[in-house]
Amino acid sequence: MRCKKTISVLIAMLLNGSMVFAQSVDPVIMTVNGKPVLRSEFEYSYNKNNSDGVIDKKSVDEYVDLFVNYKLKVEAALDAHLDTMKSYQNEFASYRDQQIKPSIITDSDIENEARHIYNETQQRIDSHGGIVKVAHILLRLNQRVSQEKDVTAKLRIDSIYRALLNGADFAQLAKKYSDDKESAANGGELPWLQYGQTFPEFEKQAFALQKGQMSKPFMSPVGYHIILMKDKRNFFPYDSLRADIIKFIEQRGIREKIINARLDSISKTEHVTVSDVLAKKTQEMESEDSSLKYLIKEYHDGLLLYEISNRTVWSKAATDEDALSKYFKKNKKKYKWEQPRFKGIAFHTKYKDNLKAVKKILRKTDFSEWSDVLKKVFNKDNIRIRVDKGIFKMGDNLLVDNLVFKQNKSYTPIADYPYDDVFGKKLKSPENISDVRQMVVNDYQEYLEKGWVETLRKKYPVSVNHSVLATVNKH
Image (cartoon, one colour):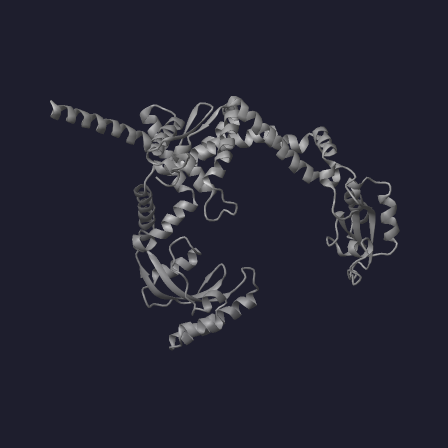
């Protein structure tokens, strides 16, 4: 009895142990709005955002809050049904397909296509005499040339031909006399040729020669030639061209055509849509590769995060002028400058009388329109003035330093624009929000973000399993 009891207890322990082990392979590290998040997903995100190239690395504990906030925003997007938008679904499907579609075919499919392209090319080329390696001497002649020049060129090419018959070196004469300078530098030698690559008159002569033979002088649309047959053969073997054919397949979009053809074939065979085929393939690949699963999920959630953040924070902070103004007034002390600024322009002119004209126009114009007005009045036909507009502190502009802040006494005028001046006013602190707009927008975004996250924390329950968190990257 004791033996049986011991065995039964052992079996129970093993069974329980196996269950615990199976459950702990990838335990739940947290739940967000009742949805479990596995340790593997957290690790994927943590490791990706804290790799060696990241400057502001976070500890696991520091990263938890960032990850939770990310998940909360995705929940808000799902509650807003942003995942049902057609634009979202199309963009997500496009990205998913980029990851999945290449797996629809194999390397052997590409290899078969490369072989097919090679075989067709080989048959076509070899049926027309293979390929030839020739050298030529060209005396270039315009088709509308006078009879006198034609006769002169004919006499000259005949003279070269006679020299060749008498034993002159073809390569040396090509270098000296040929008007095809690119091939002349190589003794007149051309790349391997096949039918259809050059003029019919040239090909007729070239493919009629045997190795070592030389043609008589003949004429093509570009002038007089003499050809020397260096070599001829059937098309190159597959292995010597394979890399170039594969490159051709990639550059011409042939891989994509093969994939699409395979998808169409599968969808017709299984009586489903191409989208269904890709969705099924996605599930299969995700079950085998967690990194791929989380990469696709990251894009799925990232698109939602972008859209909800833009609606809730970014767009509002950039366009809600009333809210920005109120925020600026409430926090105006925050935007005081440690040193004065100059709000205006530093300008350089070709003509002295433009100095007063510029100031006269600007006195009647709002600061925001200064650049456009000056460009329209002074630089419509030619560049008469050069302008640097902004809110300058010491060190931002040499002319402003010299004339406004009374520093940089060694300032030297620009050679082509010898007359210069400044126009504007010196400020101890910002006059209005436009003077520090980008800073206010950035701060208001942070303010909205913080308030939004606080709201989400209250709306969606979050529970973190700290014992599992302690095993991140250690199991």
